[in-house]
Image (cartoon, rainbow, N blue to C red; front, top):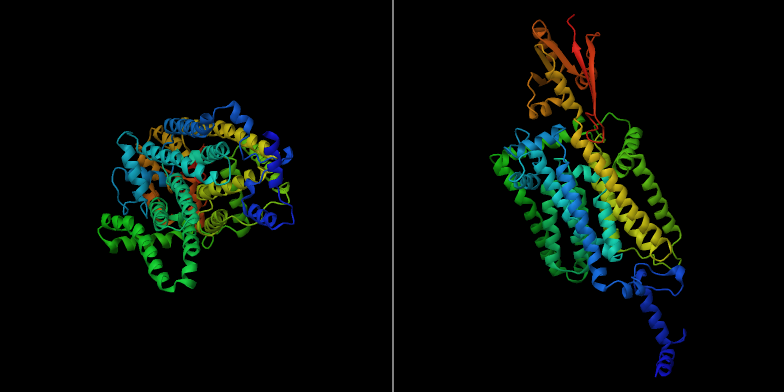
Length: 554
């Protein structure tokens, strides 16, 4: 019987010249690359689990193992992150923390556009956590932990279950992104929802369905309600609508306009949910529009840090952009982490160069979509965002890393290099945890430069007044027990200082003096350096260094 079966199987083989052979050849060519299996061990498709593994390891364990990995990472990520979340260090963080007590855009609690879904999540967490900053961080961490699911599902389109889980765990534990999630800022929550949004785009791109299109529009509405500066990722929605409706324009013109009008109006409705809520909280649409106009004008002025208004030369801006992406975003300002990225980068590059010649060159529509949104946001971050703050590049770092590693792992699956890249990725997870826990511990244990300034001023047992730039917001939030105020013009400062110098010591920070220099004020050596305070710039690059000066009477 065995001989007869082998004979029958041999007869089933078709000669290359036959029509059936041509049909099979065409069919096989249309399959994804990962479906091709080679009998050559050097070209084994490692994305397919080996049969020997299934004979040794129960199939149930193989199915459960990826989810156990994700669950373990999520538990450690949440527990360490919440217990080592950072205190308020910056003006923006104080804005968000104060919003949990009283939401008021006019009082900059928080600043426009309000980030209502992020603040709402913080309010929910505040029921169990007394510290507003920790409550916001907990919301960040919780949302980011849920993002393991869409990350895994996205990766599964190209990789095996265990490789997909490892890639998701690697991305979530990237030290700088983990650090951002432990702070009371909205970037991490935005990135978490962004992963769900990108998954929904891929889900809707696979099959035309009104429900799937509505899901993408709804998630984009949530994304905008958390982080409005992520608006360039809306290019993914445009791509999706184009892919679904362009055929209707040429073949079903009658249905094209009603369908397009329906999806556009629905997408607008999802945005209006949070916009109308904000307008109502500010007393009406007129007041909200005034705030929005003032914010947009300010954002694209000098304080916004955009390329059009910044005094930073274009060459230096490009250099700073690269430093923010590679040194801070990827390496988390750690030489050990930079070395790990060098290994991963070289291995990924080698996998591209050593891919089989018969690999399909047809671009995957989902990868094309993600490449489109990465490019759109990358340009936006360069021209319209504050280059001094690396956190503005965090979504670009997250999505671009997934794009490169997912493609590299898929390409390497056709070579022996796949196992080497998978080992490097696993070692990268361990390195991420080592570096990330170190940064979070330092964030929790070491005070910021502004906190050090406040402690020093409280130790001065004389009447005094401190003039600051933005530091006063954090000092007020921390309950500083000495007079301090923000000052913006030298003429006003001079008048107030001369009026108080006979009864108080007058202090200023170096950020105030930098502002006076920009106003071409004649300082005439009237300031003497008193003290300097320093924290690591990864926590707050703008106010990591503060120098305290005292005004001397002429």
